[in-house]
Image (cartoon, rainbow, N blue to C red):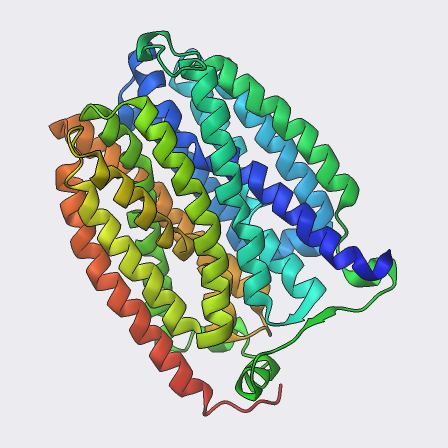
Length: 424
């Protein structure tokens, strides 16, 4: 049994991400319209809870390495699920902005310690070799969780036939259901997860590399954070990751409310977002495979092209042309690995494993800070002009710039790497 335990860790990580991101993050936009209209809240004010969540996650990501050294992964995961549960309890009993903001604090703690960063640490602890595919598989659980979340949360709020009007939506019951789900799944994950192979007396599991070139790549130990901060491509990568966070979170946050605003029905959205969730599973796995087979630049470029196309498609949403909605929901998942799978892959590809946890923590922090800005900014624009279109136009221009910046950073890092000794 012990020799198979790395795969138990993978399965447990999959479950953790499936529930944490699927029900804690994927479905957040589902609540925006129904909660704000029933409670008479501004969208920008309500979305500030997501900004708070992302700011908390950003701060915790900066200090992730210190928390890991003191408490290790298993305890952090346990604390994360307690925070996730508390977050949705706060939302369920909310009577105004304050409870949602407190819920945002707890959600930020929970997602910081149960998703991308902790998965990156567990994968690198338990496996060597082509870890990109494993990373992609685990983080693809967001898509599976998103599918389940769409089916469950939509039906709790809008009824089994999705015909209940927004004014009668049962969003409090949805929040209570998810809170209980977090508590149960959290107990299972903590019971099964282990910090590292040495804890059960085994070594890392080796995943075969595809080519000799890859073997040389994996052998590179990388550089310390103190060295990385003297590289210009470090700051280019930071800026690219930051702006990606703004753009992608804004896109995800405004897409469903925008579709509802123009008159696209819940049946179309339920069906479309279910497809979207399963495509997301495939794109996250694909991103890891592309990284292992063809390298960082190819995987980054595919995700970036998907993001640009998706942003354009949001400008043309129309209830008379729902095929555009479905095309968007097929293309948008190609963009989302930029803020999940791509962060640990960028860290590893640009800077190696020597200071992997610390550098990844900073990249996750700036990405999450960008997400905090994107969520509130897009909804503040809506509150001012009653439209998401001006925001989308700015996002398209921004993304065209940041995509090029990211590719340039990767090229510079790859050239620099040839001049760095393979020795520590």
